[in-house]
Amino acid sequence: MKLLGLRICAHDSNFSYFDGEKVHYLKTERKFQIKHHGMESLTTWQDVIKEEWDITSEDLDEIAIVFDPWQYDLNIRNESFFPAVDIHDLNVKCPVVRLNHHYAHHLSCWPLIKNPQNYRGICIDGFGDYDKSWTVFDIRKIIEQGSKFKNGSIGVEMSRLRNVFQIQGHGEDIAGKVMALQSFGNIDYKYLNFLSQYTMYDISYIFNIDFYCDKIEKQKFDWLRTIHEYLGFVLLQYFKKHFDVDETILYTGGAALNVCWNTKLKSYFKNIITPPHTADEGLSLGALEYLRLKNNLPCFKLNKFPFCQSDESPKNKPSKNIISKTAELLKEQKIVGWYQGNGEIGPRALGNRSIFADPRDTAMKKKVNLIKKREEYRPFGCTTIDTNFNKSDYMLYAEKINSKIYPAISHIDNTCRHQTIDYNFNTYYLLKEFYKLTDCTTLLNTSLNINGNPLAAYTKNAKDILTNSELDALVIGDEIFIK
Image 1 (cartoon, rainbow, N blue to C red):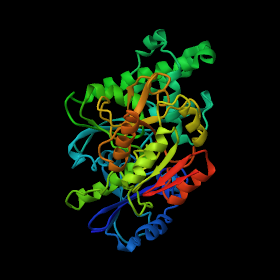
Image 2: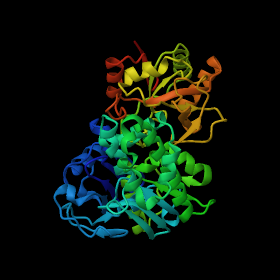
Image 3: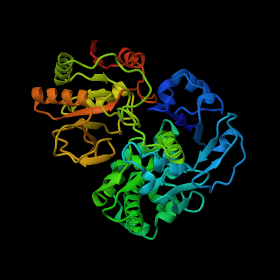
Image 4: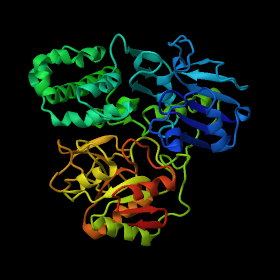
């Protein structure tokens, strides 16, 4: 069978295609180099699959789609459907089902755990279908949902803080920038005590800035730090209500990109699982898994996961000589772009589309920000082979670090979003070589892009960054380009 999982909407469109033998994945922002790219029609996706995989809709046996019908001037349907409903809007010959948005998130965990439908979990995002701001799953059924209108939405409220804090950029990136800004405030314990009357069902009240009255102009960062801290507590209490401490929990949705809350949850629920594609870019994978289950097919495997983008891969891997030269450049405090294999899934650079730098250089943060054209308040992550760091494969957790040793990656609260590396051998050997030269086990790791653009998906994108920025060098496969 040939099956297609399809996410088209205003942002973060992505396709997952099963050709009868293996799975292919594409996020369209990488192809078109437009961050958070969304397909704006119900037909142009067919041009993309023809160009990428040389197929048409007539080659497909079935399609599962996750989308918002009102984005395409279609009437809102029964938005409480579960798990899926038949639709006829795509004008194709094969059967098409529309999958519940949050359930697609839940099922998208299949590259990490087989048969995710057999596990309990929770999805929290801006909103899923119509007004659903979160959904709790208990093995193939919904046991509770939150309403954006009735309870509020963490994702929507975080995005609304754009105006309060004068944050620039795409709307889908605002929550991440808010997460960075909250560290600049101090907890107002009196206000924290005031918030204690509110729960997961009162998100709108927790974010109500009017409660802070005349303090807000002078102490808005304290307000933000306090509500952010309290939300971490609210989430932990809500998880405790629904899940056992030792069970495997699937946690998905855009809210699961918040490393502060993730770290708090992980400290209690050791077996929580969150995929690197936890936001909407994972929806097509969940749609494909639904079709697998519906058609009673064996479990899929996503080759090279998490480096599974349908993009341009260099012809050769980096040789020992190139790795040694790169490590020498990094030792000399050069900033190096690193383009290897296929691109990683998810928004975080995991070592195939990365910019690396020495985290011990006090001036490095400013230098990399200049290259990236990023806001100065935003922190950088790291990749490490230091076994003293807690395991974090996909940069979804944060850890306290020594800011005197690692000034370039230490946020104002002395934390760093980190990736522990043992599965990406090209990057692993680079770190080993850097360690031999410097006795340092860690590299600053940020995405190979300029602020406002997606990660590089073609060698041309990477070379353009080298040409048009202060980047010192670029490694593409087994080639090194030095200014």
